[in-house]
Length: 259
Image 1 (cartoon, rainbow, N blue to C red):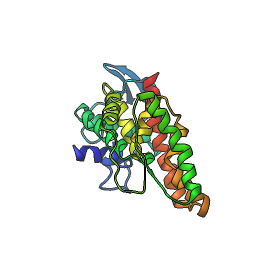
Image 2: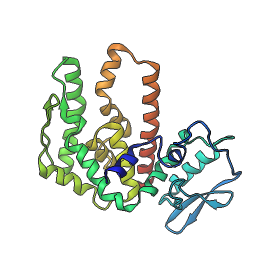
Image 3: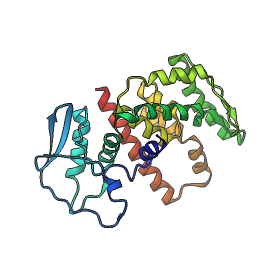
């Protein structure tokens, strides 16, 4: 189970990217001309020269439940030039990761999200400086109040990094909110949880308590405070931009599955 969860968090190596792990430099050449989307049993598939796409690792046919997801994947395949670069195919990698994980990982994915919520980013607060304390209170308290009112739960924030147990009834209620969700929803939520450090924000996003931008802002309160003090170097900015691409891709999956 742990190995499966770790695979789900390896964004760059997921899906087609994982197949290139042994040789990151020599990218495969584009081997197709035409890219399409076709309805198939169970949903929609991307086709390359009329042939349905399979995952690179386990060679499983890739079928998604929403046309919008298949269309985005097709656009990523079509955008490849002479070589296929998995780093430019975030939707393909995310969906391949879900398909290769399989439905057997659904319970583990639920547990992972609730596990993050139990020691959530928003529950551990700074004691200084006051500017950061105030920003955490403003953004995080507002989010926690929305969650508490919507789900009928309560949380116990703490100052510092010493573990603070959360009410088991609240964690059980959060777990219930994930019952019945399919593999694609849970894969997207696991990715959002890993990128933000917050299972609470991921759950709130899925239930439309927060917008994507509100989640991103809440996840970066501490980082944005440091940037305000010291500025941001180019490498850090590039890493954050890449994380935002992955975040937006997972959000797009949720949006497509709500439609």
